[in-house]
Every structure is written in C-alpha cells, then in structure tokens.
Length: 287
Image: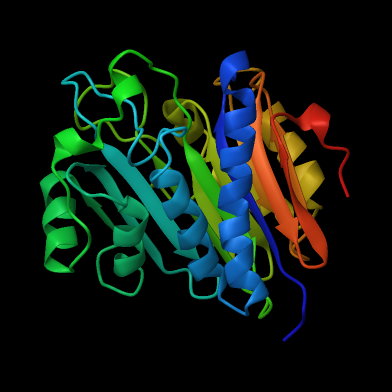
C-alpha cells in the first residue's frame, strides 16, 4: 500500500452561464472534497466515487438526481453506472424513475448478477435492495421547469491500494424521448476503469460517444501513452462534434482532462495537494 491517491470529478461539458459559474465551481469542488475525505482516510476507490457522485446527485446545480433535466413527458428519468477497476465489476441503471440516488443503486449492483437494469426493472431492484426511493415529482428541482441546461456528472479515482474506479450519473438530454439511454451507464462509452491501466469518465452528446465507444478507445490508448495525451486524442477524434469532455487517470494515477465544449467543470485532488476546481482547460496548467 502506498500513500498516493488521486480523484477527479466533472460536472458536465457545455457553456456555463455567467451567473452560474462560481456556484458551479464551488459545487464541483465540494464533490471532489467529499471523495478526497474518503481516500485520505484509507477508503477505497469505489467508496470515494460513490461519495462524490452522490453529493452531485443531491445538488441542483447538476443534471443528475435532484436537479436532472426533464424528458418529453416532463419527468426525471436517470442513468448511472459504477465500475470497479480491480475486478471489472459493473453496476448500472438506465431510464429509471423514483430513485433518489441512482449511483447508490449502481453500487448495490456491483457484486450482483445484473450488470445493467433499465426502467421499471431498475426501480423494482432498487426498492427490493432497500435503496432510498422517492416520489418522481419530488425529484424535479424548481428551476428545471424552465431551464434545460444539461450537466452530466462523473468521477474517476485511484486509491492507496492502487485500485481504480469510475462513476457517472445523468438525467440525459433535455426533452429526450422517454426510455432514451445515452452513454453514461454503458461501459466503454461513458466510463471505464481497469487496474494497471487507468480510469475515464465522459460527458457530452451520448449518441455520438456511443457510436465511437469513446471510453474504450481512451482506455486502450492509456495502455501505451499518458493520461494527457490520451485525453487530447479522444477529444480530437470527435472533430469538434458533441460538446464532449473527458476526465482521465493514467496508470500512475496522474490526472488529465480535455474538452471541445466551451466549458467543462472539473475538480481534482491528490495526496499532499489541495483540491482545485476549474471551469475549463484554460484555467489548468497541468501538474
């Protein structure tokens, strides 16, 4: 066991309105600090991802959990996934309603037989396993009745045992067709984690990311190059499409992020270094 750990979270790729910028920075910073507390105490990568993502699901500044955008039926319908890089175990829920924290349901699934559950099947599983359930109407943040800004969230972690984990959570695209599922809960698209290689989480237009299996391409690139180069190549491969962003940890736990959207809210922390938050790549000089 070493004393080295690192964590990055993102709060979605896209233009951040001037009146939201500092609140978004503070909210993203709070999320990474929640995960960093877990890691500094010797907690696992999986535990740190859940802590950070759960906080973002409860924060209306993000398109995840309470604060998620509304679908065409004016309902909150959520996707989330969690992956353990040590075992390649995965838990994911998609197009689920009535669940307070979908990342916690993904966590419950991590060692269970199902890998991905959708719709009513996901909701029933959550209830059977004792996850916090909620009236779907109570999941609609007041501003979401008029605001359709989308801010998917994600987190990647490297813990003191050398294990990686990745997580995502989203309400998807504003006004989406009910039942639509994007990249966020799909391994190799919106997220991936593998010990000895690294971890990634993405944000952007889910259909484009799915078609390019961008998460898998990123992880494959990490087998031969560093996190910063892999992140830049992944975003470059999009050719300016999709308003995409990615957060990446390389095999050594080194952090990087890249995006082709105007902004990408990111916060990171490492052992021995203070947590920092950035609203775009231009604010970060690298480490």
